[in-house]
Length: 193
Image (cartoon, rainbow, N blue to C red):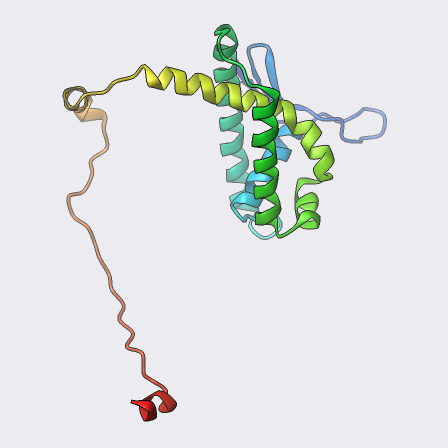
């Protein structure tokens, strides 16, 4: 599949205002920069990453989120070829309600969540609904494909023997450290005993 990632923002030529841009293209589907920003902010809330305090960590998160979004678009392309997979409106609404509830809890309230998302919860819900539907369809397709896979112990050994040279070595040792702090009882506790 043809995947093209653009790294530049698109600006309006007349006044320099932000228009939006394409973060990635997968076949006929695109990932907009605004969608990437929204998803990265949502994941940052969930992982308690403050972009203002830890920008490097946030940038790594954005790269990871973009990869996940591209993977989801690829799965969605494949799932759309399978006409037996669909997401009902009820499934999407329930998943979206759960997602919003998680965001509110992890952000510490509606005001904080809206600030991190850069929009109201109502607006987020309407914009993210179709993305949630696509996510559910992709997950159902992935589950359907994984259900067909059956790996035996023999398969694992065979894989290991075949790719032994290309697998990174793993240590048979472990380092353990232990810090022991003995608590001292208070004078009041000593008097009681």
